[in-house]
Length: 294
Length: 324
Image (cartoon, rainbow over all chains, first blue to last red; front, side, top):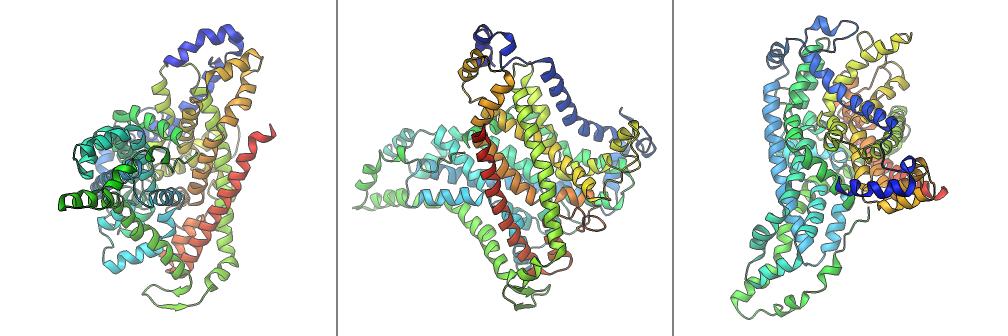
């Protein structure tokens, strides 16, 4: 904000208001308004339908204002036979939290080594991380992954969902970049001269400095894993789903009962909505910082 | 997207410290020598161990499986490249490839152009910038499944909002699932709705690194904002655009949840497979018909397709600013 406002008088003096590239015209504002309306409307409308009755949802034109059936509809979602919505939510919370903690830990460790330590093969290993970020491992290896879980007898267990998700080259790359910028080499060397071993340096020097980066990675990972669909769909049975798989079951079995389905989708976004409202600034900041570094 | 893999410029200052430890005389020194030499590998090992087991191994094993007639209960016979030749002659497979590419193109091109324009608008002097940015990013919090459910509803034939809106202009209700192109449009809008804001934020970040003087100088020379956008912003954004194109390519070619949910949760993608994507084809062959070998071969061809199309897109985008 400050940099933009500073340039304002100079720019307008230089080119006149008409050519000032950072002036928001009425047209720009109108287009922006439309874009924001289109972004928000489907979410708004989903919540509206979730508060209505089925007759309302089938009326033409459809309702645009909330009704009074939200509690009833939510109750119906949890009571819905064969959907196992409650199990889905609990499973998703366990899976998303475990994967988030795992990825943040793994990435912070590896990122510190890549950014602050010297070892043979470092650049080659880091390059391999970057290259494999481009490979859709989960989709590519899905057949053998499934067979592996069958052989281990892990089908329909949460660990079968969790373990493959822990492989996340993006996290390692992000934390490497972050550590490089946040942990000065001199600090690491000074700690070593003071007699600290590597683990100690990591814990006492690196981790405190990269905590903001860890937070960004954690938020992004949680959102990503909460929304995963394909792998849980294949490896879990319908009576032990994640929230996304439960949504599919709800959609399958009650395909004409819109309010029920929309109540389900509304419940499914509540955790992410909370994350979004609480950490919105960090999400934007993290995204934008990451974009520039790449 | 210059991947700064080599941080060598900083490392070169300190190896003298390491060389001193090269011949450890006492046990204490030995420990610290070990710490210096071995610790880095311990730090990176969790990632690489998991990567080897759940990343590389399945990938290579997919190749192995794809060379077999591999059925459900582990019944397998080696058949060489037969799965691949059969696949390349399989109309259903090519149908899924055409669908995937079609949806990818009609989703990605408008999406990235809109994201650029949106980013440029967000880069203006505006009040409440955080709220604006969060609003365009809001679709990201809804899961793919929720998006697909809501949009399938919006595109419903009888009670859908889209048909209602079109009806105000006298358009007859469209059965969006029925024809290939209508289903592609419906699916593409789901993808676009979710990702346009995200890409706009990425572009916005890159736009803010462009020095303001460039625009001021252009303004003095009398360049209109539109000319400044195409002459300064877009060329300087090229690395970021390439990055988003590659990410979109991977996402587009592995498109799965949206078309599945749009087709009532089935892997067939409509009555004649008019919106079955390659990812759906793989899951259908592998986990509904239990033709593991066939599905594995399809997975490898998908990977090759991604590589080829990422390279093509890379070349295309790199050429953009040159002609201008």
